Length: 387
Ligand code: SF4
Ligand SMILES: [Zn+2]
Ligand SMILES: [Zn+2]
Image 1: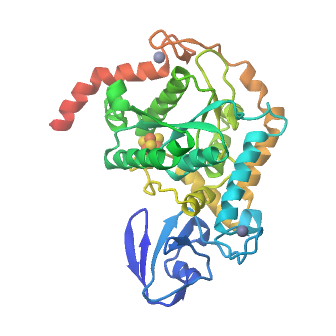
Image 2: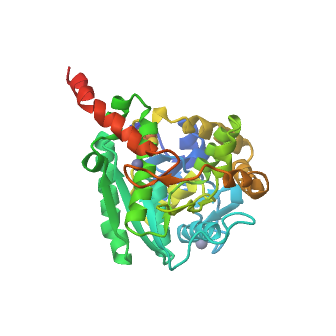
């Protein structure tokens, strides 16, 4: 049989018939970190594959081994050890939307009310990856007024494919339900790409990229009059960030790590993370069962991003003890108000940036300073690259 694997893209030939579990064992893959797709459907560990089968193994999600759906008893397509449950495709989509509903209605214990309401205009930061597109799709399905924002980062073929996927999603799935896509190209709008900006400023690519994206998200949300900005950060992202903050005992970051960040002054919008209760694996499976096409490949510059090692460390713990990741994150959020929230009240006063008017604690905001540095050296960096 022909097995297509991703990240890196490769094909393995195996002799069948084999069960999905046997295929994964032969390839030395952890069933909890992949999802197996056969003839367009998610398949479980006991599914039989013939000698001529063509299957795809996608990272971070798994076929699981749940025999029947906990809701309707039909054959299960995905099992989630953390919930000790299995679902058929349509009830799995309900489960994901149910967790999003829970996050929106009750962000954390003793917290400041709902993330947003049906009256709010919501802007979803979309990258072309599974989390953000699934989030946009789920919010539209749930009846919210949600538009998407795609920022073109200029990362070669990766950005090109991501942009195409977002445009396709917008035309086929968002527009019919009233959602539109806003696009901002970093090079056109601000004069640099993520790689050229990093080269010119000698800062890490993810550093330049992160600051630029955060700025553009807030800027567009403010300029276009949105009430709230949402991002596709999932349980794995948030648990990894928490682990990193705890390892460095970074009190300021711990104080700000919440699923809802209220606006604290002019020219700011509320920022929310409605996927914080859902794992990476659940989000990828949601895309498969609802037919969302997303960019499976990772950003080629991701090596500079230490979040990956933290995620791997948490996956080791999760394998031995399903639910460990969720306990770690939810336990922190339950204790947040009592132990960390106070710290934010005494934060420095925000003023308007003298260049762009966006909120900052210094005269000129970090984005404008970074941009100025990049544009001052960019022609030189260009010459160096040609030499
Ligand atoms: S991995 Fe780094 S460079 Fe790539 S999109 Fe994410 S933040 Fe930007
Ligand atoms: Zn069902
Ligand atoms: Zn500025």
